[in-house]
Amino acid sequence: MQGSDGGGQEFEAAKAAILAVVKNANVVPNRVDKYPITVTIEEEQLGMIYSGRQQGFFGKNGRPAMREVEEALRSKL
Image 1 (cartoon, rainbow, N blue to C red):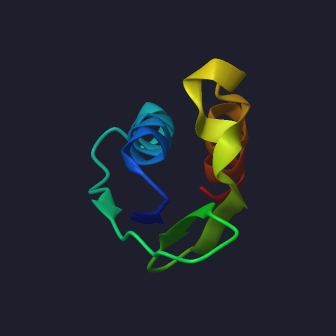
Image 2 (tube, helix red, strand yellow; image 1 turned 30 degrees about the vertical axis):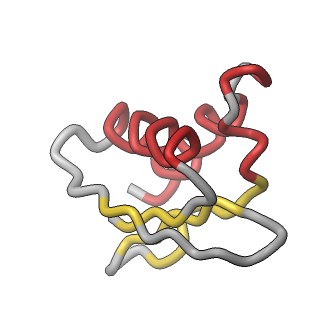
């Protein structure tokens, strides 16, 4: 699986959400410097799993996007 994010905090949170559902996933960062900053999670066979604002992965916001990623992954598997 490949995740692209605006920074390390977002990547680590997205990676944790992916690994919570797919324990053996190979999560690879792909940082893209463009605005607005989003986190996009794609899988080679499943296509786009999730794309949303980086703020959903901030610890200060409670990381609500982690739940969204987990639900999106479960619905595709």
